[in-house]
View 1 (cartoon, one colour):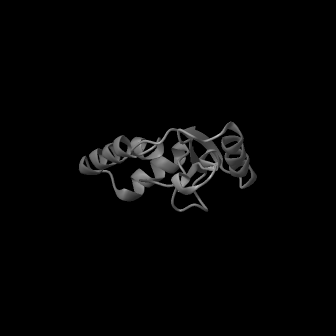
View 2: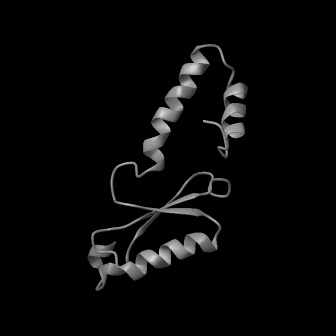
View 3: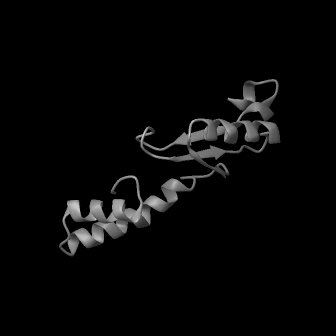
Length: 101
């Protein structure tokens, strides 16, 4: 997208987690050409819609998806050890997660 603009400093990415109406995290992605003003505007937009915003670089998986693999792996392990899906979801939500794995 930025490559075809006269001013690529006006571009940044956003990554909403699904379901977006439940998940609070919003990853704002800086590009090598994003301006400080563009990044500040993106962070302010996230706050305006009541999201918890973090700034990340452009890489595979960003932050949230890099964290999901160990989280899901632990859930799978306790499932194999005999916990029910309902117990795992309850443990996750009691801990403070918006939803279970």
